[in-house]
Image (cartoon, rainbow, N blue to C red; front, top):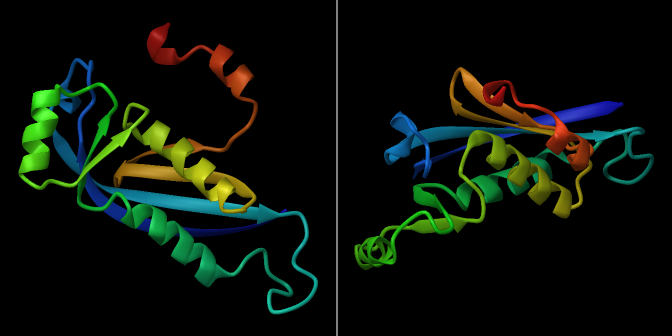
Length: 154
């Protein structure tokens, strides 16, 4: 198995609705996204002969995804009052609504799925919300993942 990796960063704000702790408050991160793509065999002909994928194109595609969240306020659908959203929009803030709780874990899966839709065979995506804390999504059987217990819930 061959694997190549690239990374990009973006800065954004978020909060975790329904969370009992500091992260329930609006705060920001310098998010670091590391994507790994794989191939069983290397390209056999043409410009990409001997490669998994073109590093330049892979880097550009991940940068495009990361840049779409840069300097924005990311919030989960239904987590803000309509009056709050209206006031933020009137102020001209860049708002991005996502259909998931904006955690590193959910972003790792989101970026993984985006890269797959771009045609990459994704091995895994890591999302760091601090230099020391990251979440990794590597695909797999979602049904078996949902049935596993989470240590924090035991």
